Image (cartoon, rainbow, N blue to C red; front, side, top):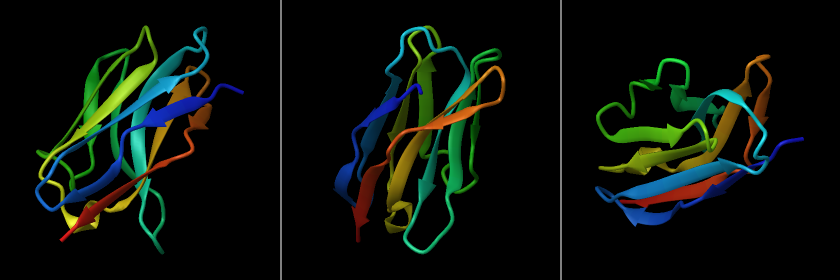
Length: 117
């Protein structure tokens, strides 16, 4: 089972910035897309952003458009999420995810992001 290793996250004040990074541990792994999801306490996991390698197109949840930027390297199976203008409602555990060309998903263990008001 390929593993995704996440880094970044932490505690920041409202209006601050954080950067999350993620990399697939297996060099031979080939992903069709990579992205980020988040789960706040008491809520379901939700989509945040993703990047499709075949087109280099990026997609964002409406709640983060204009504030978050996803980028990555398909050859290295790495993806980052730059989060600016953070709000308390962005507080959640953020999960890196990747989908291979057979539509199978793998997930990171999650990293906590806390935005204080």
